Amino acid sequence: MKAQRLRVTFSRGDEMKYITHLDMMRFWERALRRANVPMSYTEGFSPHAQIALAAPLPVGTTSDAELMDVFLAESMMPRAFTDAVTPQLPPAVRIASVLEVGVALPSLQADIRFAAYDVDLPTTSIADAATAVEAFLARDSVPWEHRRDEEVRQYDIRPQVQDLEAAALGDGARLQMVLKNDNSGSGRPEQVVAALGLPAPPRIHRTRLLLAGTSPSREALRRRGKYDT
Image (cartoon, rainbow, N blue to C red; front, side, top):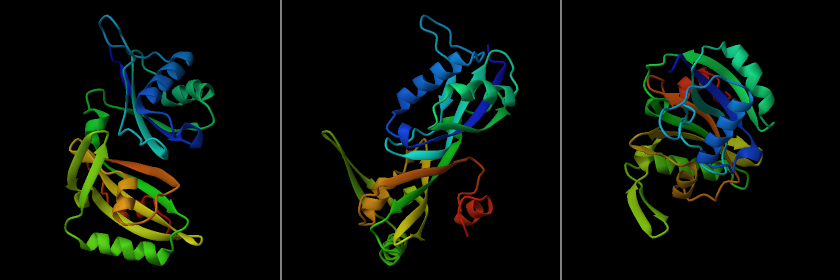
């Protein structure tokens, strides 16, 4: 029985960036059990905790913006949830906020529309990055080929990029991008960098997940504190 639904925003640091989505689900279930959180469980032969992580984080990526819904069998104050769970977490995982949301709302994954990333390019000059971004945004179509094992997929990567800007980062550059992330497809930062003709980035950091009804424009994100002015 679901008595309450809590939406948790948490960060993942360097020590957790190579954990797969499935392993992250297992990690949270163990942590919540150790914290004695009254989770709701599925019925059947092999019941499991009713938790949902949104928008799987690409392996090797860090984040300040991961979202998780936890369904509880008994109501619990968000502050009490944070206080109980935090001691069970490693330093690389930090709870930023916990909010109660409606049990009957759409699934978290179905509500995600875009993801914002900071992509660091320390060996690329801001001039080269800005030129590549300008050329990319001016195109109506950017054909892309993705190979995975024996499978080859061909598609247009341009519609996946909602917003893209180059900013200075010391002697290098940082790409600030907002990519499509919904049930029809998800943009991948490393593929956008490759499509720009720039070297593979040593650091990709997810800064925000945007739900339905949230403006994905850079100006709106700046007003909310996403980008420095």
